[in-house]
Image (cartoon, rainbow, N blue to C red; front, side, top):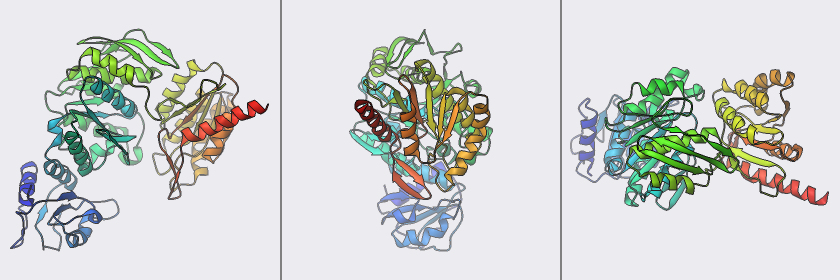
Length: 502
């Protein structure tokens, strides 16, 4: 694609002011890429100057042009007119459409399923991918844990990358023979137009609970961001919506082709009686297309909901019931999502989970409680530089539903970890005074995990919550390796060794 062809594609999507094109501008040359970071511009790129929180991208246009950018797209005219300059009303929307055009609209060559919601996105995406694969359709994956492209895996840097990365990964998926792609779609991505220009085959809404209010300010704005995914869907694409969630019920009334799922209400997709255990769940998923006999190693009621979402989506897209059943049987687990890290010869059960909101923590504890022969021990913290309103709520939930709580650090980032713990304790202390739980505070996360496992008695379940699959900890601007799974297993080995010596 030439630069001229790419810019014409943009004007078809976003009619705006006429481009300022200097005499002799080289437009009929191959375009080599679409860049929004001047440091990543290569000769022949189109540079899109995004407005930032700290600086306007237009300020970096001279560096981009010096690096070889052959055109600039921005929300206002800059001073450097050595290259064509296109002014648009929304630069973020422009970079999405440019990226889709540059990579040849790969979403039109696959069934792309977008999954949004506060909790359950990652697990639902893994289940959906497993079902597509069981049906013989090679399926890519983009989300919080990983970007999976054919046989390659790339560690995820954010749940939904910027539009050029999203479109580039999709192009690689198509080239690798993928017939489907499942992607988590964050509220940030929807607000910032990272997935505009994608043709979704289906959208999934899992739930909406308190999170990211540092960015969205209030729950209405947060829900409006999530709802944008369904506004982007083609008319014929199914909107698979959890109507156990009040926001889901509202959403289901406004989408064009609703497919509802629920555990507690009448819906298109529902479970029969469920058998729960530490080894997974079994039940019948009743759908308009038939009944799927579900046997899954995923644990707990929230995963019943995630299974219904994935089964309902794939069935609506024409996947046979037998493939749905097979996909559910073959998925052994999801990294950092109710991941049992203890061994069969351990006298305690240790689970690592990503739960980092009060609602996710409540779901985790309510899932674990009936599976705990004795006490429930919870280790968790709250992230720094993020929504502070959820901190005391997390403390309250943990102290109300656990027997022993160890409050520690998560990723404090630039905040004082001791102050974060104090804010969590505002919710935990009243519950502790009522005798609902013993509450300890240990700032060092490694020490907190080790201490909790050491204090546990035979038959206890120890939950390590908040970081899940993450392999790092961010403290005062420094990112250091840290893995809850590895730390918990080291503590379990020390417990076994102590038991052998004893």
